[in-house]
Every structure is written in C-alpha cells, then in structure tokens.
Amino acid sequence: MATIKQIASEAGVSPATVSRVLNNDLSLSVSEETRSRIFSIAEQLQYKPARLKRMKQDQLLSTIKVGLVMWSTLEDEHSDPYFGAIRRGIETRCEELGIGIDKVIRGVLKSEATPLSELDGLIVVGSVDEQEIHRLYPRKDRVIFVNHDQTPDDCDSVQLNFGQAMKEVLRHLYELGHTEIGFIGGSSNPDLHGEEGQHEDPRTRLFAELQQKRGIYNPELMVLADWSSNGGYEVMLRMLDEGHRPTACFVASDPMAVGALRALHERGLRVPEDMAIVGFDDIEVSAFLTPPLTTVRVHTELMGRTAVQLLLERVEGREIASHITINTKLIVRESSGTSR
Image (cartoon, rainbow, N blue to C red; front, side, top):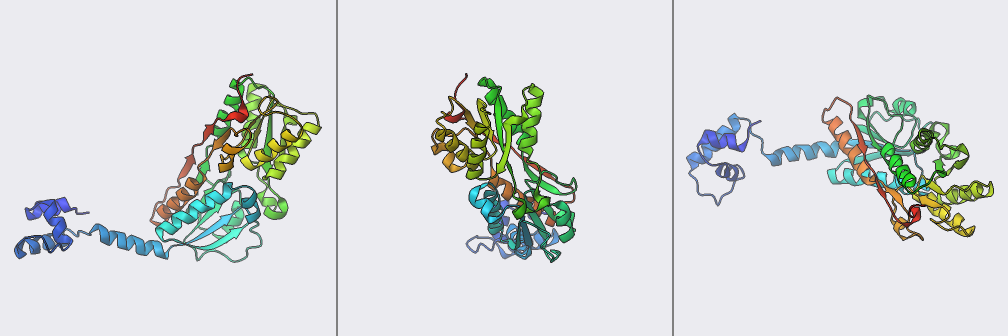
C-alpha cells in the first residue's frame, strides 16, 4: 500500500508537503502544478488516506452484531462480581468500537430454541455446554470462549492462568510452614445452570494435584459451596463442626472468603494465628476486611476486552484459532500471616 513518503519521492517534494496537500491545507503556499502532480501520483499509487480507512472500518464495526452467552445469572453476579466484571469489559469495548450487542442469553441454553445465525459472532462466558452453543451457532470460527475450561482447539479462547495462580498460593502457604491446608471451592446451582453447567472448577483440580505432588493431600479438607458469602460461611462452619481445622485455607472467591472469615470470628478463632486465609479475585472490599485479605488479583475486565478484540480479528479474516492466557498476581496482606 502506498505511503506519503513514496508519493513525496515521486513528486520531488517533502512528506510534509504531501500530507498538507492531501489534507486540503489551503494555507500551504504551493503551485497548482505541484498540487495536481501530488494528487495524480497519489491516485496512480492507489493511496488511501488514514481517515478514509478509519471511516470504512467504523462503517464495518457499526454493522457487526454480537451475541453474548453468560453462564452466570444476575443472581450470580450479585453475589460474586467475577463474571460481571468480564461482562463489563465486553460491553465497554463494544461500546468504544461502536459494535452492537444484539442478544444476551443467560443460564440454561436448552430453553433457547431460536438459532443465532443472524449474528456475526458469539462471545461465551463461563462453562456453557459447547454442544448447545454449536447447535445454536454453527460457525466455530466466530465463537470466542472466555473462562471456559473445555474450549475446542479450533475456537478462540481467553483464559486465566489458574495454574500460575494456584502454584503461587500454595508456594506462599508452604513457605509460611503450612502442611494442613483446606480448600473451599465453588459449585453451581443445577436449578439455575442445568446439568450441562456442572463442570469442575480448575482451581479444585489444580489444588488436589499440587497437594498430591507434595504428599500432603487430604480430601477431608476439601469442600464445595455455592459461589456466595453465605456459601463460604456455611461450609466453614461445617468444616469446623466436623472437627477439621486446617492451619490454612484457600477460598476460591473473595465473597466466599468473606463468609468464611465471619464463621471463624463467630467461633472465636483468630485469623491468621489459628487459621490463615487466602482468597481469589481481589475485589475492592478485600483490602478493608479484618484482617485485610491475602488474595489473587485477576484482570477480569481485560479478559472481556480481549474477547472482543479476538472476535473483531475473526470478522476481519483471521483463520487460525488464538488462545490467550491472562496472568494473575498474588497480593499478600495480613490474613495469611507470617512464618509459623
């Protein structure tokens, strides 16, 4: 594609002169002969100004129709902001680009009978059944999976680096001297998400694998609850009532950790002296808890924005599937304590 420098070289003038002529700068003192020569050379070289290319791209973006499939319900987002933050990232980036989100589907897909073939692409957030997705929208090259642990190789995906996160959490607790480490993970409500939404969370699997590798795995210290503060509260009480009191506990979401902390306070247990707690998400309130919560910082809005970019690349013709992994960061605060 021709550039301003090429036109300048052909016309025997400076690039600045070419730029001002092509932008119809009437304050420029240049002969009509030179002006005509520049326009003629630009036409011969099929030069297209950046603003024209931007106009054409903006026109393309305004015609793109996107569908959004959310594993999470509004109730889920109210109790745990994780998926809501991903959704906001998608919506914000679409709004910036002028892309329209034409359809939003939540929860169980089997009740959705209308094919989605009129859409230019689909962004799927969470562990939605991929067979149901492809039943409604057969174009695999236009489906972007976000936070989906079973993404087909020929579809684009955006994932958190759960492996990195769990290794950092457990390394931190090992270095503090902990060997009896509990796990409170999340499970979905089949009434809201259907049986197809019942996928094992990667953190559950990774925690068990890493503990087994170290030779200190204890399944009695692993419990699951719904992704809410109440869920974390109830299972921590149950764990204590059953006589299981690890010296440290990883909780798979900050809202669940809030509930777990309350249960420990009610039973008169000190954090971190009696039990260290590590959460996941780094929601805003985490730094203001008593004690401030050690947690894993995740870039959920970036995940959503990245998904929109991947879809745009597909619409523009990219053929090879792309799999993006977003790293996390352990934020150490007072709830995990010091070496034992």
